Length: 313
Ligand code: CP
Ligand code: NVA
Image (cartoon, rainbow, N blue to C red; front, side):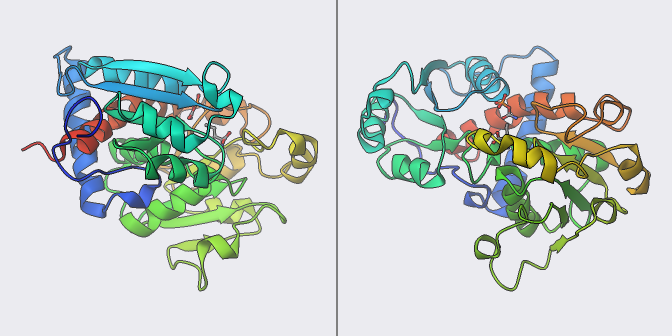
């Protein structure tokens, strides 16, 4: 017996992007299209009727909280929201005990936390699917939404080029996993000292990856230019030092001009205009950041359905 409702298949988690195979990602993206279309037509889609989602936030959030919470209600289920401060996690209850307890009471759990090992420990003691809502190492739900958004605007992503400009953070490493699974090229440009860690990406580096010292070169010919904050949550102590190091890694109109003429711009948000991106780019005609944010809702509904129900014929 697992959680509030018996699982219909083997227990699956989504702790990093590669936890889903290429065909499973394709299924989730196809299902997202159907769910989004129904949402736009105001058609009910209650495939998770009476199911309960627990969300555990150990870091701040706007999009992740609202998209998971609204999404679960739209699927006919309900939601419990926990933070470190208002739960016993803030009083040092072990993460393993928290997982054992919550997963006997709900059907699916989303966590936003610090180290990837923390969510892995949680999942190892959970009886129900666990979803990564962001860790220091990965942000897989965001990349699912970004890929769905890319396909909506640019068509199939296979063989295309994505340029990542800025910090080698949770988003960058998740883009790399996606590029390997889905077969697109990833150009990365980060300042010295903030480049991808060879120990994490392996040697030789994946063939889909090309690293550039000059961000302009990384953008050349790209179908998507994307970036993120210079300082991620949990690294605030490095803020000043990063502001100096990243000064030339601001996505601006010149970088967009060397990208493919059809290129779009994405940012997972929240954004800092004048730091990692100029206002004219993020608020300009090539930017799809609001579609990208909205698509978190639709992909996560498809993801929760898949983890709980498997493929729906
Ligand atoms: N992009 C994203 O995950 O946003 P939040 O931090 O607001 O959830
Ligand atoms: N890289 C950022 C993403 C925020 C959604 C962070 O981890 O803070």
